[in-house]
Image 1 (cartoon, rainbow, N blue to C red):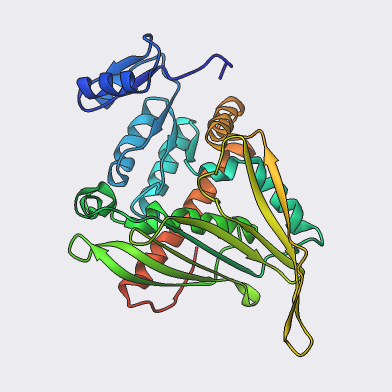
Image 2: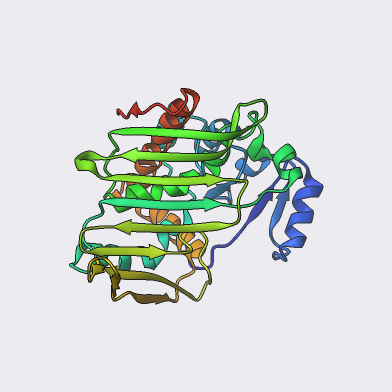
Length: 332
């Protein structure tokens, strides 16, 4: 895409809503607005679409976008289940268009700095990954929002929030598959069909594991910690960066106890700042580079692959939750 590319058009099921959103966002007068998604997909001046529709609408509109020759950046969760996402992947592959999920923290420069710390003696390979992502939803949200409606987003907090926890764990463990998954859902919405509070354990080979909680019922939190033999790596804003100008993460040594366990040994914790990266913009830059390099490039092929891996784990999480939290083996 050329450097001058920008938002060209907005589509809604109501033309007035599209126009109102354009005005609200202060977009240029040249931006076109449409009263149907079909109109936008038939616009030859559009190369790619960003799709923040309810999850249950993704299969229909991703496949339609692919058939129209549009590259697709789709919000997470990418599908209701892995079978649906495979259909989307096949449609995009057949059309030769790029398909990527919208996980912005994956594109921040901080991630590379963190990987370097883990690859070096400062931390070491991950053995345990723990994270939490939650926010206190209002009563209106818990009764009316699409994320608590089985007809819109049946994965609820697991898909809306847990997608990030799972992706962070996969990143930390080098995109290995877990051996098993156990999930407990303590609160449900929409007649017990949509999870709104969950705790999940992913068990990897060699006793490594990831534990996370996600939900709509507790104070806002978005922290993650990677524990290894040599030390730990921690960040307090792993999903939504605290600032577009500056983020950080903390590295600490192994630490420990001394003097008959009466004194804590200083871990030598130090903060590492990363500046000059706006992760949302970086995500769109990555997407544009994938489009420019072609859907068959290694970079473009990576994103649907890891999205499918994440979606498969979503499937097993939901299976375990519906089975009372029993561990479920993960299989390809």
